[in-house]
Length: 338
Image (cartoon, rainbow, N blue to C red; front, side, top):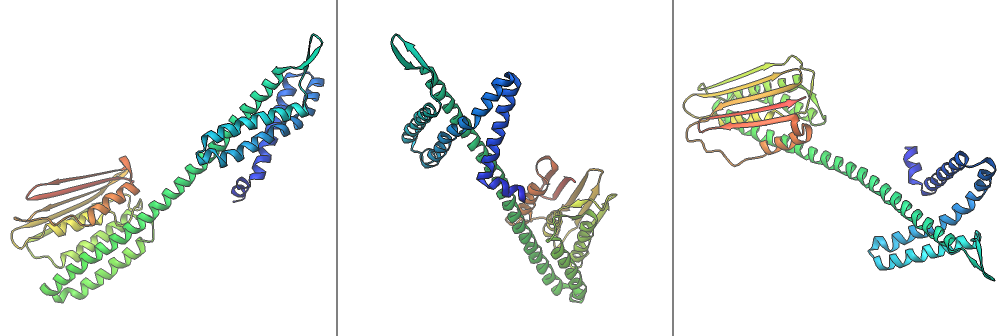
């Protein structure tokens, strides 16, 4: 925090920059010049840097008032005037050499040229430093804004997942109340446990593979209460590392789709759900039959939310999601690198 405050203080930043420049110049003089000459040059450093600072800070003012306002012509004229002013200021405090030509004494124009070149170079370097610093700051600010945006999007996605789950479950309970009302108390208790998990996990960035698998088992148990005898459900797990972290509620949409699309009033319905784990990843495979004459409803929130959350939690090669669908069969495979 103190470092951030320091870098926000322009006066301290510039003082540090000038001190660093003085140190570099002094070290160069001491390294390449004889001791007497180096001492003489060191005494002149404050004057020369003070004379150089005037056009530099004038140029900073012009950058903000003209160049950044896209007044390019005025900026060019103002910069030319600053270079001329800086050159004359340098000549006033540090008189150029005088050359005798015949009976006349004239100033050595090479000193004016060197002063102008030095000022132009200083303006160029300080301008590059100014906008490089701005670019770095803008980059980190954009990263911060992007992180905040992703966090906001994630919160919205979690809210949508919760609402989507509750909507589907209430529909299931309605169907259960019509077909098997005696099972409603058990179903309501299971729903309370699922909602409690939803509430707790939505406040966390990660849960464990084991707790998510237990949640899926409870959800499948709740769904099975309303199924008829013509529907067979298999749920198998192979989780040697149940404590590995996992994004919450990421697997539910695929399991929901099995029960949403595989249940027909007649014929044999099958649902197979396999959750397996390796040293580096987790794989969920769902396989369900599709009833004859089934017409899928327009895509809801489940799969779009799943894809969005996969891009956020497991971007790029960290996830692979494939779907194989025929008229009588639907299979989805989700592989994650944890």
